[in-house]
Length: 70
Image 1 (cartoon, rainbow, N blue to C red):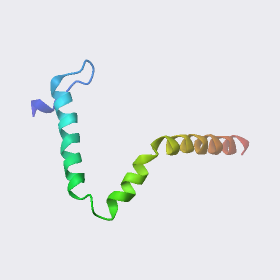
Image 2 (image 1 turned 135 degrees about the vertical axis):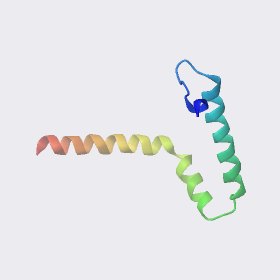
Image 3 (image 1 turned 180 degrees about the vertical axis):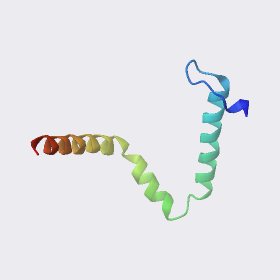
Image 4 (image 1 turned 30 degrees about the horizontal axis):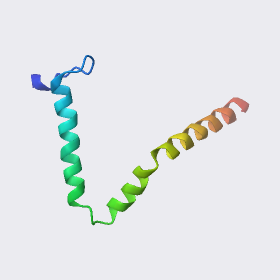
């Protein structure tokens, strides 16, 4: 199990191999199910991440202001 003792900073080759390798395997798995009903929904969700990021920041700011008023 010592190969799972990875260091992120400074970058280790084992850390990069684990993250990039698992990403490639996940991408290959997603391409296999490209024609399913779920994948277009995931593609739409992943197509606008900045919109959702900014939306959640404004939502948190609104909730913070409401909590401070109460």
